[in-house]
Length: 262
Image (cartoon, rainbow, N blue to C red; front, side, top):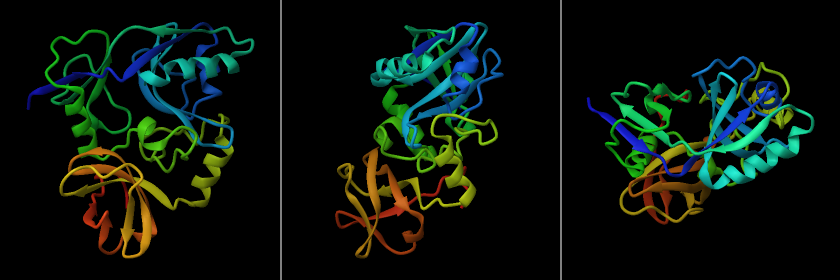
């Protein structure tokens, strides 16, 4: 297989440095970053106090702190929110201008495995030796693996992280202790009260409009989120998937990802 390498212009970086960088973030994020070693990458979220997803990110260990890999359009808002939580913590929060790169198929040297699932490939920061694919190619690969894009599929402060499969994609450490929104998140997992998941759906033709209903007969199963011709992510009720599903009168099929237990 040949390495695919793409530059993701829709991602940006934040540098969080200082003696309190790890402890500061560990008290906020869904993932344990207190002992994050340089070069290690973890997937995490920052939630609202009621437990809904505000920001998704990759947390990259550095010698003197961490780097956050975030949605480019949300970088300023995330920096502002972290500054609100900073109080007396000895941390410096600044934008990092390096590029975000992804590699898949035969993952190129220097890329660290995507912590959500190895099927996604790896991530790196800086300059690629040779870009061989586009961001659109990467989106096709991500959809093929069946992993949501939390920023664009959830809508800020509207979806619980478990609905977006954070618990199955190594995005939540339930043993780490407190984080913002921890009580609601832990209760959902502990009770097994998980009624909805984001799953890929396949269909013929163009992508339906976002919000288009997925139906099982007359029953509402869920709604279409983002995607491309032929495949999209949808937020669906797990108890209504048996039967013939449609969107706008067109047949659709749920494609269960290999990494997701039934």
